[in-house]
Amino acid sequence: MGFKFPNGWIGGAALVLGPVLLLAGTLLRAPFNFFFPDQLRAVAEHPALMTAAYTAFLAGNVVMWAAVAFLVPLIGTRWAAWAGVLVTVGLFERTFHAGVDHAAFSATKHLGAYGATELVAAGYQELHLFSFLSFTVMFGWFVLAVAAYRGRVLGPVRAVALAAMGLLPLGVLKGTEALSVVGTVGLCVALVPLGIRVIRRQPRPTRRNVLTVVPVAVGLGALAVLSTLG
Image (cartoon, rainbow, N blue to C red; front, top):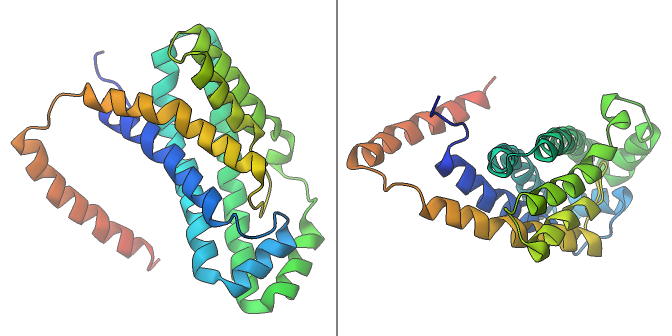
């Protein structure tokens, strides 16, 4: 019963890496206009930069599930449980949007910016499961911030900073605007210090742990390469 997942190492690392990756992705696409025609034009003109921006944002979004899963038991209240459900569903929705973004990037490569824009515009308002769950993307962060404050995990300033993540715009091929920066900076302010504190409290890795990491990392790297061949 003493086993926890994610444990302190995973949870602490996620609390640091998730917000930083989201902020990096947000800042990388900041030079370009917010709406999707401009985003697709930027993809055509700066493919490496835009791929890095959207990949960093997607990676941060995925890592955040572990951060939230670690944070909710740390707060340990009913509010936190509901907030965890809402935020996690919101993270799933942003991951879904990232898949559509990737498809649009591929369309830009093959059809050009104009053709991809026409394709995206034709299906932009299509209904899907997450059309009915978009409220979770924003609302969940507000509930989580209240829970973290009431549970005394975050003070008032950092709780407000966490709530700012609820201001982050959502949807397919959304670029960066002022609220995007406010939200991701707020997430860093709220969670990165907590993640560092959690990591510092963990027991030092043993020599056996360190030696185990090397073959595991090599194995995972090999599996990652093989995964691209399927």
